[in-house]
Amino acid sequence: MAAKERFEIPVGMRRVCRRFERWRKGHKARLPIPEALWAEAAEAAREHEVFRASKALRLEYGKLKRMAEAGPASVRRTIAPATFLELMPPDTIGLAGVNQITPQMRILVAIEAVDGRKGIDSLARLCRGKLQADPFSGGLFVFRSRRGTSIRILVYDGQGFWLAQKRLSQGRFVWWPGGKEPARRLEAHQAQLLLSAGNPETAAAPVWRKVS
Image: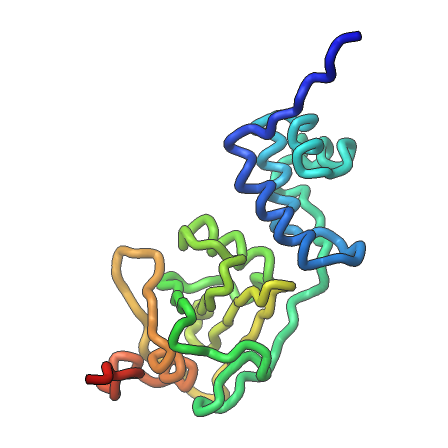
């Protein structure tokens, strides 16, 4: 009897497999797979064949085939709508007390304004494609609307995405980074100033000092 052929995951698909494994470990219940992961699975299927992708990612062959053949626009929304939370005051800033902004947190501000209608999945794809950053890393991503009157914050807490929005009742966010890079990194105290419609480049005391 012939030996069963061992299935080997293509090198280019291993990163997607790791994302699925991390998501499944954090979601023991049978929850819908996020749209961002489905989009990656469909892309992997188009590149490495549907059969290989469905087997490596443990997905339904028929559904993955339909999505891969129809293209990126066919990915259905399989997660709940974006949740909007009120931001806390600057001295205790956080996403409704769930994710505290700490000095160790990586904070990236997208330089280019985005469409205010974009939801969690669209912003997550923007992080990966344009900002060249992993939206699942736990970092905090800040986006500004085209009118400059509101900002949105996207962060992954290990279990799911949080999306917060602050819209000014008067005026605009006057300061915003510029340059050729797609994003600019801020420190925690600078992010607090930005979310208060202030200037993050204002001189401030260091967030820590070396002990001699």
